[in-house]
Length: 344
Image (cartoon, rainbow, N blue to C red; front, side):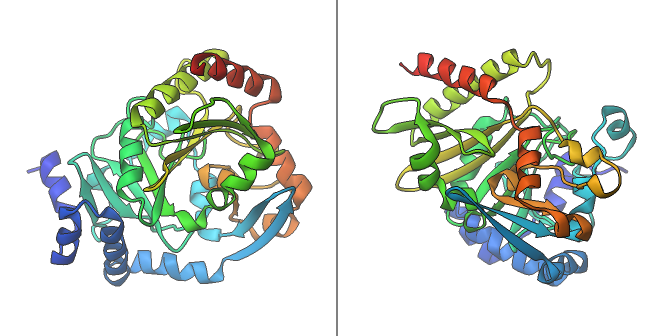
């Protein structure tokens, strides 16, 4: 007899007295620390994935006022090269559905809606996947409020990431987020200097800060506020305006980083894109660079799974990658102008 959806969910929940005591106070950050520690002990495949991080190599590139790292991480090849064409996705089993997860993989329940899981192909030493209980398309418009609340719940150590279905998500058919240690996201550490050097303030308010930032590589909207309703309404406006501008029937190309600070509230980084993968991804021979930028890449750490690509990456190639996938100046200026009008 097939397990019911509820039974599958309950079977996947990691339980310990330590975790239960954390969750009673909604301390999901420390509960995740315990989950990761135990999964490394009980799940050999995950343990190997984290051991592989010891072999990761990094190159650092200094741009004008900010840093971009390139990371050689061979275990990310499946994610980087994931086939996300609708017809091909429909042919395979969904690897994020609860009954398709490895038997050793357990997670933390969040509001009977999500399961917080350890990512077996980590980019950083703490890397989690947050999977929606139901098989539902990767789409943020109906779940942005969940994204914000999750960012607050794990904010002691972690930030939340969203990759759109055509923006780096390897499972475009199943709603999911990621969580990584906020200390590993370069853009958060460099946020104030990016604002000071490249930020255009779009609203004049003490408690609600909205910036349009164009740093020469990336173009993004940064919202800083403690007012969750203000953030939700503004995001809906950005989402709709962008969708209409690019005449997208489905979700426009978007990546989001959500960080929460007890003193200042939410910091929401919204990256607006025109393309899934850069031209170099499709080149042949020496011109090929196997890279598929997602939120982590846009945050300042480019993931390169092939050694030959890592060896030849340089500042010019990085610039070309971002120019290919990020929206142009004209559209960004239009969106900033639109936001100024609604924020007046």
